[in-house]
View (cartoon, rainbow over the protein chains, first blue to last red):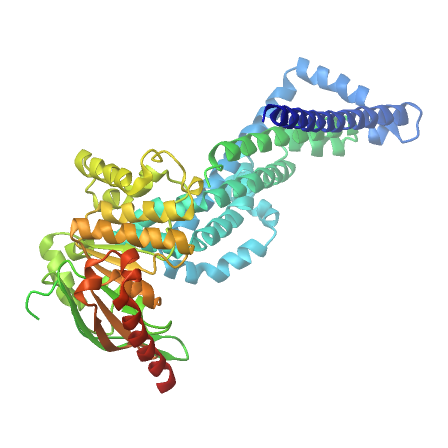
Length: 269
Length: 276
């Protein structure tokens, strides 16, 4: 009994060690790729393999970054964008879920609105940008509205669809106890759709960024989107690339936060 | 219909679709005494599940009436008037009925304890006493200690037992069993039949079992109502002899009278099919 156990334990340890090793190797390659990318970029720029005016260089971007941090302007722009994105994300997701719930509650409303939802969903929402600016003024309100508009319809559709896919037998169980429609919603429909709602969160992080950056392109007052469009207009591609890198970093952080929420809340299935 | 616990009178139900009108039940009349265990037996399409859903108050029948413990459940006009008088949105009769489905349908996002207290929560009858009783029933049924588990940590038989506790927790006067053993393996099924039968016997519950399994119907019931398909009609009632009634399902299956009764029901079902 004991020797067998020992053997199995040893094999298990070896298996775990192999897993850890594989993980380390992957991490190493990922880091190497990152370093290589920036090294080649820097070299290409230094030795004029590419035009440094267009493609800048990591060192120039870092210098600009320190400079902009120093005069506090970067923090203002970054904060503005982050604020707009988070609000757009929250309002778009919560609003979409709410409309989805309303559609579930009033089936006749769902049937009536169906063609309008299809049209609105098919339409490229960024095309509404100019109208939003005219209606809400060239400020952060219309930028947030862009973030909302771009995510709210798809959230509505996904959430409503997941509400409808809930196994009707759960409702049957509740109805045999004489449950009201609200009780059915609270006890069965909402918890059963929770994973679907969480997965729309992930999609909406990306969509909110698209909406806000586009909004800032149009409004052109402040924010990372403004820095990108401004840098493009004055041909300062160091500024454009720096802003891009910050956007990439922040959206990744936001996505990981949502993934964390999913892990914590979505596991109970 | 003097003091019958469940009285069904000339009940008909028709399902409508765009192109068809299918009569699932045709002029069914039957009654069940208090404390009796009856089975609705028949091939698929004989409307037995429809009948059960009507008794549970989930489907409104096209015609006919259903009375539970002296109170009218269908037609609805009378039922709604009574509910108004009782001051609730729903008729109080509905709460007298417990329903067990083919699968357990325990809610995977709730623990076992939350699941078995679901009915008490919904009906607003959750008190320390009713909670205590539900948990005691869980232990009695052999599931003590799993209160904090998730349903997917339990085996199929254990889950169906937990579903039975959920159904019994609200103390229903009438238990409706919609093929609750059909999704289980043979051994678990026999054990669970035994357990359900004993539990219902102990609490003196009236029960209706829907099944297409002749042996199960004989082993568990006091009476069997045999239905024919398309449209669902009640064709015959089999009275189970006293010596079989007294036996638990497992011992009834060993009883000499068992196979004779099986033969006669089998023949009847065969003749139904050839008559089609």
